[in-house]
Image 1 (spheres, rainbow, N blue to C red):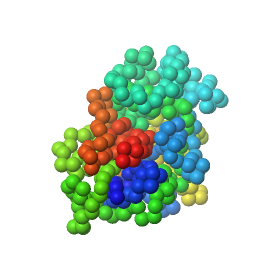
Image 2: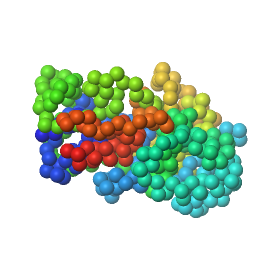
Image 3: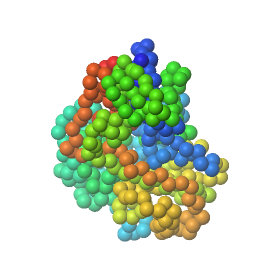
Image 4: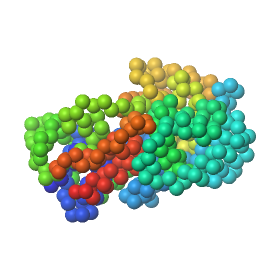
Length: 404
């Protein structure tokens, strides 16, 4: 018996690939459901993902594991709508290979220079083939990479910082340029999507691939000693092998390590509206990172089941701050968005706020990879052992299963 601690994407994946080899496992999950950070709540008829999340269809591990058709994936348009702070207006940067009708509006937008847009085309072509091997090389930061590439300050501030700041959940773009190149290529190689019935459907699909009874919910592990796993209930279990599939912080606690891991935080605030303020199925970026609104989208424009009939679901992301009062934050967000979309925003109703202080492991250029095998008994998987993404969670779960 293999005991897996954590029913997030990596733990579920590990169990699935073990099952494929005829190896039985038991997943112990402290919470009331599978998915880890990939969860969806039903609230007043709305589907609320716990923090704005997307799947990139070009992720190779996701392609290998998931049944995209059953997930009924719904795609964003490729590109972004960018808030023009000076003109109180919006510009668009679209992927010309996927949105040819938007080429002219992209070329004539105020975002960056014409030379910047040519560099983006070149970058799309250069990163389209980037594989995981890129992480084996030393790296500079994303911000240094973009400057070295020749992008203007305007292009960095107006597009790269708000867009990839939203991906990395940090506004300085200190994240490894290797990760930037990998993710940038995947954005343009495939589609950015959400399952029709919420991001949690990814985890639920993997769970259905397991033996019935593999996952034991509401079961918190408090200690590991050799082959024994001690539960909060006082019970103890024995496993021939043990796999830590928790986030890095909890993994360090169970290993008795003094953790010095850094995490990037995000806060997602949801509103109900009578209609969507957007004409295009794109993410809206705000270059003013000092504001309360960093990125905004309307998930129900992409996947209608996210909202009840006659309603729209608005998702607003804010990064890198400690939540002081979610109601006050919601009021400030509405005040700001009134200047964007007019008085109709006054009628929006605050649904729920998710503050996630450990949303993603920090992945700067000094990052050193951890080993998946800790001892002959103990193994570890999850994006904390690789790079912060769904693809890494799946990949490390599969690799540990293959080791076992």
